Length: 105
Image (cartoon, rainbow, N blue to C red; front, side):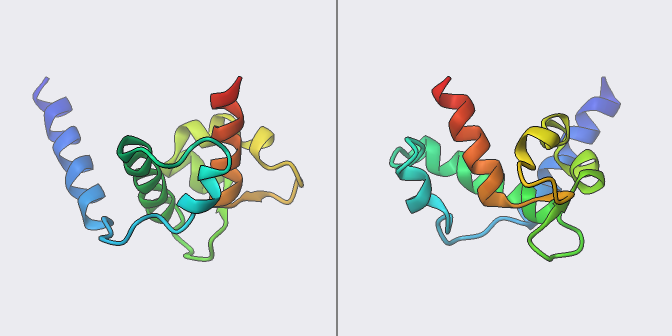
């Protein structure tokens, strides 16, 4: 139990290091897909962007499957569905679009 609490604290501390004060850049695009507007949705999009930034260790805006496995396991689980162009990486807008599609279903 103590290990779990320590891991959770470490995770939260590391996520706060990537926090940004500005609103999510992709929020206007997400509003058209039914994922914008509410404060809760904006916070979810912000967290998604933070997690993507943390997982994208090469800082090129492209998340490989290996990076996803290490930093965004749920994205890794659905990687082939998100990577519709089959180029071996996914971008934040692709992940957001996938989530919007899943939300509608």
